[in-house]
Image 1 (cartoon, rainbow, N blue to C red):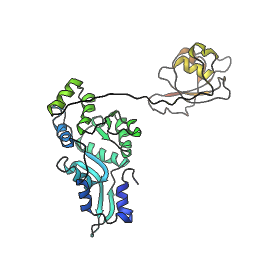
Image 2: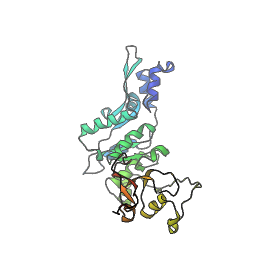
Image 3: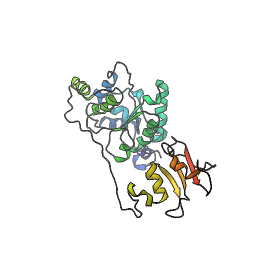
Image 4: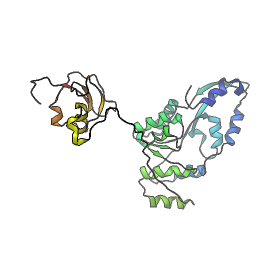
Length: 302
């Protein structure tokens, strides 16, 4: 079952939901309470910049009939992609044609991108639920802009920007800042031209830390000489160790996997020789990792 499409699967499989018909879904959509100024937001996207043409599409895990009914007159039906049903002759849901949830949202997004003929870095994706996580990671990997409109930690840690407001127009702020490069004064003038005032605009960055006692504390930098070899290398040269193994605390017979961004210090390279085998890969896949082994006694320095 696709994450986020639970309602659709209940309608299909749960006996209590088997009585749901298409007209019930349409009526449900009409009762959904939207955020303030959703219609203004959709119209503002069309006239936001003379240099950019923004196409507004909605991808939802909910049944398509609900979303189209809720956004009637705001978003064209052809720009709405939801979970689609196949109905039997008696009006009962017989099958799910397509569930636009989880990884399925990526497929829909790629189809829209191909239709519009744009590159990945021209995508702006907004989401608020767990089914948006795969899409956000996909968009981030191609340098697109992702915006979380929920304070849930699991999504704010993935999205590049987070906006919390009960007004749909608020989502335009990161677009104006990161895409259009507008300053705060111009952004305020834009909202004022639409009869809105940014009464409160608080920007914050929160660092959440969990600190606990270390069983084997590492001495400060002024006493690095007394620390284990692994600690000395890390503190002296700023190297990031993705993994290591050693048999003794002070043993230099460890196997290091380093990301050599700025670790080419001669003092460190003299202590090790390059391993001929490459069994490791860099987790970030941005820098080529190196595997080192201890230099045998008598081996000339590099």
